[in-house]
Amino acid sequence: MVMSSKRFDAVVVGAGAGGAAAAWRLCEQGLTVLLLEAGPRFDPTRDYKLNQPDWERYQFPEPPGSRGGFTISQLDRLDPADADLRSWSRAAGPLVRDETRQAMGPGYWHVQGVGGSTLHFVGESHRMHPAAMKLRSKHGAGHDWPLAYADLEPYYALCETQIGVAGPGMQGDRWRSTPYPLPSHPLSPSARLLTSAGQKLGMTWQANSRAALSAIYDGRPACNYCGNCNRGCPLGDKGSVDVTFIRKALASGRLTLKSGSPVARIHSKPGGHIESLEYLEGKKLHRIETPTLILAAGAVQTPRLLLANRSRHFSEGLANTSRQVGRNFMETLSWNSSGLVPGLTNSHVGLPSDAICWDFNAPDAIAGIVGGCRFNSSTQEIGFTGPISYASRLLNGFGKGLKEKVRESFGSAVSVGAIGEFLPNEATYIDLDPLEKDRLGIPLPRLHSSLGPKNIKRLRFMAEKSRQLLKAAGVEEILEEFGAWDNFSATHVFGTCRMGADSRNSVVDAGCRSHDHPNLYITDASVFPSSGGGESPSLTIEALAVRTADTIVHGKALPPSRPPV
Ligand SMILES: Cc1cc2nc3c(=O)[nH]c(=O)nc-3n(C[C@H](O)[C@H](O)[C@H](O)COP(=O)(O)OP(=O)(O)OC[C@H]3O[C@@H](n4cnc5c(N)ncnc54)[C@H](O)[C@@H]3O)c2cc1C
Ligand code: SF4
Image (cartoon, rainbow, N blue to C red):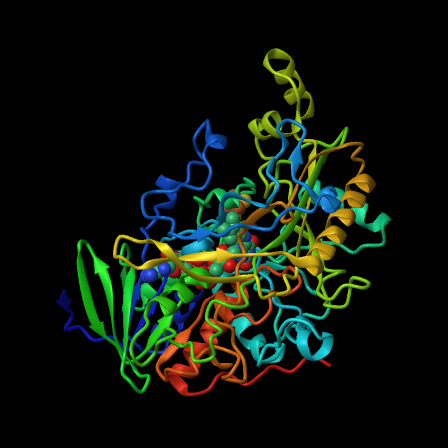
């Protein structure tokens, strides 16, 4: 063990959305910060292969060490009565042939690396619906946030400016104190088609707010509309935190960033004060003391670190007097439907998820169901940007005939995506795997998830509305559908260290400080008390993280904004 003699004002664990934003704000306010990241650094020009002739063969790169370890316990048995929600494609048939729900790919999609999961993200940049933060008191389900939209509003605006978010003038109940820093992107052919299809059904679609530059901004270039954000953006216009918050924190000269440095142990004094932590650098364990510790390892690895660091004084793990660490896990309730529209051209061109419909996003917007959802144009997001996707998913046949069909149909695919509220339940949580450990001997996190009837009811609404939209858009036959009913495929995960006013049933307070440890803060998606009605989470994670940094430095956050009159 190497004892570090260096001193920093704060140590941040995890260089993803929440860790990067917190580190930036602390550095900006004059503090010195050590940012420890388990995964590697990515080089956008080398690692993201969108400039290669065979680019479509490359998904998001996965160099060694770029995925954290975890296991998934037995998932739900599938009730045949819900078989209309199965995942399938014309070319591949059913995607799940089992009688139980299965993990699609890794199941929990994330990136271990400098930039965290934002390296892989699409870049939707959303504020929470104000009412989605008061689910329990107003709608009798889930949990309330101990703060309101107005408390987050100044931080939303601040983060949007750091990122260069491009968005529309108005977004209904999401009132703003300042306009978006950049105008919204022009709609792609498939987004325009869905907007007019939505009009036929009485739905309002608008440009989505996107962490992708619609003009040169802050030394970064504008988007070229290649459509492949989730394969990694080689230009640097996508607002992943490596090119936004981390770049700025490094420029301050006050950030020390160590990649390939997983944190293993956290030591607390008997009274609760966090004293030091251990991390791996090269092959050696290092121990460093810190006056302030910020955990931002994500909603799966943060509860794992807390649960694994049991001690005589904290026998349930750190920050876990309430026994809520790992509970309240919320995964992604998602749906996608796709088909071909005769006569549509160039649907592969444009920014992914460039149009959105918020009509059903408020918690009471879907009749008879608590918790909302949103719909978005997903043609590029789910990969209909190149010919291989058509041949392997939408079209039948082989050889010359298949090539002919690809030539005829390429550019006419259109897809609707939907994401909805995931209401927490007792069967959905994270604990430590009793058998599997990492190379340091620390148990891996184990994910348990069950949808339950309320989430399935919302998912059915999302599926049925998506089908209606495609029909209104001119799709004669749906050719692919996939969703959360039979596929565990979580990109947005939340809730495992939830914030709350009452220390008996929450892990951190409204300032993201642990109820048990006065110098321990959590600034990742694990603090979310509720998932929201389909909002993408990164902007809210970042806003909360910057707010937390302000409370650490000044003892208080910026005053809440007032809605415009
Ligand atoms: C394919 C995909 C598409 C998405 N699209 C969107 C979108 O359009 N908009 C949006 O808002 N969100 C999107 N998301 C979700 C978004 O990326 C995440 O919600 C967000 O990055 C979570 O932030 P976080 O800080 O909680 O965790 P992360 O960003 O995952 O960061 C956690 C970091 O902690 C590190 N870490 C873990 N354990 C340790 C340890 N022991 N020691 C040191 N470091 C550790 C990890 O390596 C990682 O870098 C998407 C995600 C995926 C995968
Ligand atoms: S569409 Fe724009 S933001 Fe997305 S990867 Fe391409 S250049 Fe980057």
